Image (cartoon, rainbow, N blue to C red; front, side):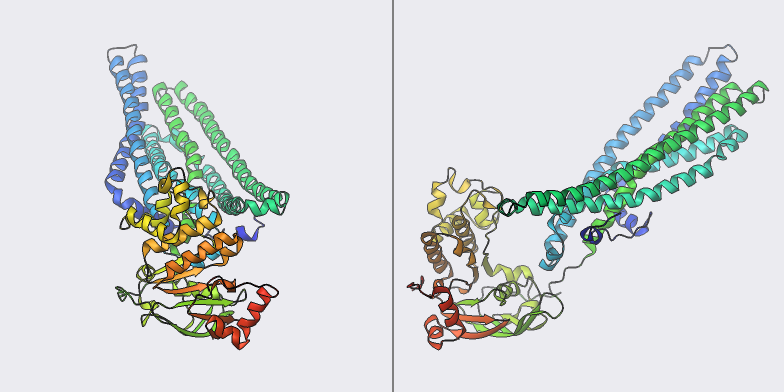
Amino acid sequence: MIDDPDIDLDNQVSGKLYDPHVVGRLGGYLRPYWPQVLFGAVLLIILAGLEVVGPLILREAIDGQIANRETDRLSVLVALYFSTLVGMFTIRYVQSVMMNYVGQRVMTDLRMETFAHLQKMSIAFFDRNPVGRLVTRLTNDVSTLEQLISQGVVQILANLLTVMAVMVAMLVLDWKLALVMYAFLPPLVYAVRFFAFTQRDGYREQRAWLSRINADLNENITGMAVVQLFNREKENLRKFDRRNRGLLGANLMVLRWYAIFEPTVVIFGALTTGVILWYGGGRVLDETLTIGTLVAFTQYMQRFYWPIRDLSDRYTTLQSATASAERIFQVLDEDAEVLDPESPRKLGHIAGRIEFDHVWFAYDDENWVLRDVSFDIAPGERVAIVGSTGAGKSTLMNLLNRLYDIQRGEIRVDGVPIPELAQRDLRRHVGIVLQDAFLFSDSVSENIRLRDPSISLAQVRAAAELVGADRFIARLDNGYDELLAERGANLSTGEKQLIALARVAAFNPEIVLVMDEATASIDPETEAALQASIRRVTEGRTSIIIAHRLNTIAFADRILVMQHGHVVESGSHSELLGRGGVYAKLFELQYKGQDLAPTGS
């Protein structure tokens, strides 16, 4: 059983063997393809009929021709028999191609819906859900559902129709033999039901362990530099081994029950065949049953138990897909916490005034990160925000972009409360340079304009020139067409920051947010170049700069000092130093004993 708390969180599903809600929702994805599904159902009915016809032709050939030592119609019967086989092959081929097409289309639709839903989710959702878990939903779980639609459901229906048609045919052919075979059905149904329930939990554990493994892989591969620098390879390997063994145990549990299930069905088939041959053979000797009828009946038995055996495979798919569907729908059913208003107000070109009015915010419960924060920023004003770690500086950025909603107070842009704006409209006017610039595996130009066709290559080049990124881009082998590695691994920290600044310049927002902590990890020459680029990008725009290194923000029009979620001081660099308050103490702590002139002076 699962003994990992992360797995338990990932394993909260209904536990029902058949959930009509899940089945109904899956049916909704098939609705656009109902003509193909309907045609497939017609093919299934024809296929079930052909399954019944074959043994009847065989009985006629034996009783009507061979037993009477006649051959006048034998060639016709043989031709009919082979025609049914060709017909069955053709129908199965057409049906397989069609349903695989439907399955692929449904998988595409479901994956697109899930990805679109994830893009609408609030950042708090991603705080709670590891990346690997979400990747599992979009890849493994969706692929499992495709198998269910293209193979599982259709084949299960085909098998059920075949079984029912064969049962009726056997009853019509000889009801006494049919009753003998039916006597074995109750224990067979019980066995199928028992194995189905035992396999269900195994499939649920499989998905849970796989999800956690994917999350661990993503986390460890992304943080491999830290793992190696702190010699955590062995500990991480032990942790991965525990979870890998957990997945192995879940897989083996499913395999053990499956290994018992299929032979059980085979044994039932063999026992039934033996009893039918014993009972039917005696009746043939008593001349109360023809040999052709007995042969046809044994053929029907094979066609009865073959779908039952195949159902074990399909049931495996059904169990796995049900668990996958539950997990996908869990993601789709989770509502976004930050929502657009029903009738959002429109923003054209804005001046860029920002107002925080008695803002209170906590990420959870009432562990307040911001406490009654109020300040105004005039259009075009450059404001730096400083304070110790945990003071709430970065939170201000998140709230202004409405990545989270505040609990009390109001945040306004040009006098409009931001909850009255569509998120897309708000963020169109706000550009941000993160402390860890995120670059995509794409060309330099596309990383600057983020595949926005409204931004021309000329604008991309102009933005790069404005921030000084054009100099290092020119040195690249392919210039603006140079493909960047994952997260920009083939660029230096400073170069990535320049790309992020060029991105803001290309989108030309009225408000710019800059988090400059990353400049602390680069050399003084690059830092000076970056600071000059920041000044150029923020020129004439309302700007907020989150700063740790106080000598870099002297060019700001105003500095806000935060402490324990409050704004405790406000003023220019020289004013705050002259007051001898919190800012002066922070500056003294950073630069005590150093004769450093502020970079921005």
